[in-house]
Image 1 (cartoon, rainbow, N blue to C red):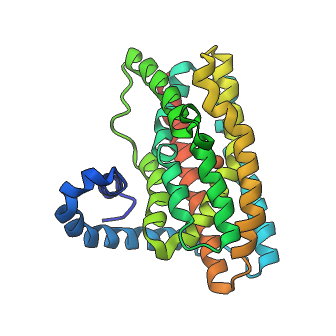
Image 2 (tube, rainbow, N blue to C red):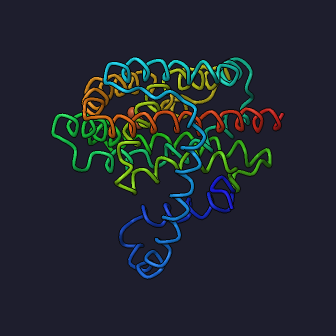
Amino acid sequence: MSALDRNVQMKLSNYYRVFLGDPARLVAHQEGIRLLREDVESLEDCWNAEEEAGISGLDLPRSQAEFLEWYLMFEKKMNADIQYFIDYMRCCASAEEVAYYICMEEMVDGSFDDLMAMVQLGMPINCKMIAGENYWDEMGGGDYSAVHTTMFKTSSAYMRRILNGKDVSIDSPSTECLMNGNILLMWALRREYNIRLVGAMGLVEGSAPVRFGATTAAMERLGLPKEVVAYHKAHISIDTHHSRAWYESLLKHYSSCGGAVLRELALGVSIRYNVAIRYYKYMYGAMRSLS
Ligand SMILES: [Fe+2]
Ligand SMILES: [Fe+2]
């Protein structure tokens, strides 16, 4: 069975949800988690191998200078290749189409603070400081009402009510949606793949402001309340800052750590790109099918 199969992705998603849940709840799952781990790791290994095969024809950068230029090109390419999605979101998407997108995005953004907490383990202090600042931003700088996951939940809860009113189900996410969240969680939990996560997080944040800009424009066009738009609007500038800092410190540092590390960093960027492209292609079709 391919790791791109929905049952595999659902299994991984369920495992990550339990594994990254409240530690108090994990107590009841000690035995279950231990029994599942071997199976999960073998599915993850298959998935990594399949994604690596998917980029085998790609000419990966071989030096720091090559990587930094290649990375910036990828950041632009990401949004250029989903321009159809961005344009549709900005100009045409209905309230229920925007709502569907936001509810599915929760699969990534809903655990972004935990990803940011995990990615910084063991890093040298100059990198850890940047990831730590990013994490503290996620925590709203200590202000409970400004915690990003809380702001996001305010938005997604409102959008879910729109979908409920229209009888649109979001309880059964597609394979592409599951993969979009799972790939980051897998690389965070499997510490031997943390460098892929560093590359992928760069691309996630570096390409986000354009999409947040389009989503904000759509929500304002639809006249949604300020508090519902707040998360997306704030992230246009927040993620511009985050991605610049990530590039200047983490990507510059790790791309100078030798060929093997450089390759992992580039794999993280290019595999994340492929997973995201499949996700937006699916999302565009799913949104259009609602109207
Ligand atoms: Fe955030
Ligand atoms: Fe961010």
